[in-house]
Length: 106
Image (cartoon, rainbow, N blue to C red; front, side, top):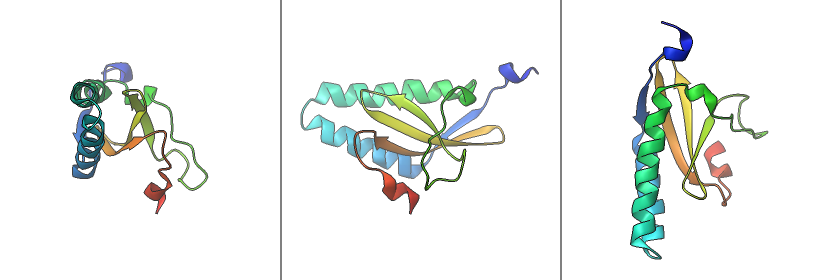
C-alpha cells in the first residue's frame, strides 16, 4: 500500500469529548444552532484524519516537545490537538484557539 493510501483509525479521547461538549454548551448559551454546527463540524473534520493526518500542521510552542502534537482547525476558533501513533490518530484535546491553553503543557 502506498503511504498516501494508508488509512488510520481515529480515536477521540474521553477528555477531548468532554472539552468539545463544554465548548458547545458555552456556545449554546448564545446560539443552539451554532453549538450544533460546532459539534457537527468536529465530527466531520476529525473523521477526515483517517487519510493523511500528516497534512495538519504541528503545534509549535517552546514548552511542548518538538513535533508532539498536530492541530486540526474546525469551527471559527477551535482546534483539535492530536498525536499519531502507528496506525491510530488520537485526538487528545479540543481547545478554543482564542484562549490561553498553556495548561495543556502541565
